[in-house]
Length: 351
Image 1 (cartoon, rainbow, N blue to C red):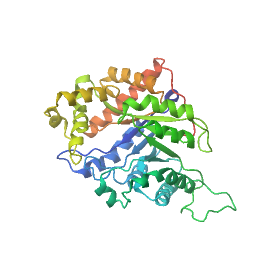
Image 2: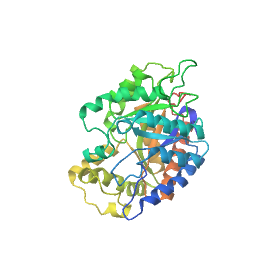
Image 3: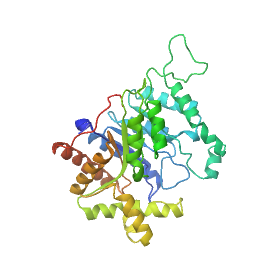
């Protein structure tokens, strides 16, 4: 199924942590989930970055990437993404250059510009807390890309990462708005849009990226990955039950960001207000949730609306077996869509 008809299927994992379940279990399950996804033919596996948010076990993407790359052999492994305002570009470059030595040709560096977290978290991350600091993002990104680009013989830079990269390490820009799409296009970088966070902005951002894209030494043609919430099960009813924790988290997290994911049984007992239900209906309608036939239909709609070259499936589903089942049914839906003649998105071989 991998790269079926030019459409790639991948995973964006936030490593959900569940109420009553140790966070260590969620992290250890990664080492079983990634190989299972690899066997299903997925293209890449990315982990996010979160801090001071107990519901997500993704505080250290480089560490997780090393572990995931060590238990897989064909998946591209990367960050979705490293929040660059939280880090020194030189250190990020050395971390990923080192990962690439041990797993050559398989490491992706996805970069986000969101600072992430409230002021106390920002201080703990040794960020300045000064809003003007955010204006330095483009400078930080250019610095990072420079470190990860091999230097020409006789043109050794004053500071270079160790180990020095032999080939340009893939750098992606992540975003939730049209402004991030414009920046990725201007720099000639592959772009990943967080449809699972801002579904109403997807089509505008993707269109702007493709319209404004400028070829670069890193990428000749525009390439877009779009993330979506995916919950698949044998029936629509079971999928909605499994999606309950995600929906509750969307509304409960706004009230208390320190809460953990509820289990499906716990989420089923959560009383939503009419306003909350209306918000969730609108937010999840463009996501991919349902039984096999519903998933196939929603996937076709997703591809038609976004024109994505790749789907980054984020599936915070309770239980390892249920998560694997979600990825299996999604892979089946892609195969069936291609067999049914759905026109594929264009592919970029350099991504």
